[in-house]
Image (tube, rainbow, N blue to C red; front, side):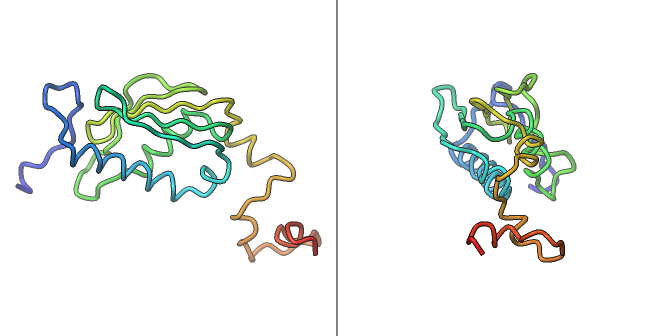
Length: 151
């Protein structure tokens, strides 16, 4: 079957999406999001649900723009056996919403009151785990964990 392997078709190409592929696509998307500490740390009220049309809906408050999350998924959801990515855009993305097809399964991303990654990273007082764990930086300023612990 390796020779006949193809990139995933869209759910609308007439081929029904199997439950296994539907859940595998969801697992790959959630694993990609969980691997990004910036995304997880900056979002509030991250929720997801199944749509009636064999799609997944993912919604969050604050955090990055929906188009930024779509770009992140396009970059991180990969299969080494396929030359192309598993993610294709299903429409134009904006700050508030984006639609993707991952392995032929539709994902609708919705950001409520998004701040954007650039603004989140520049936000003063926003404690970031990546900064706390970066021991290569030496400055006269207090380290983030010292700020957090009051030391």
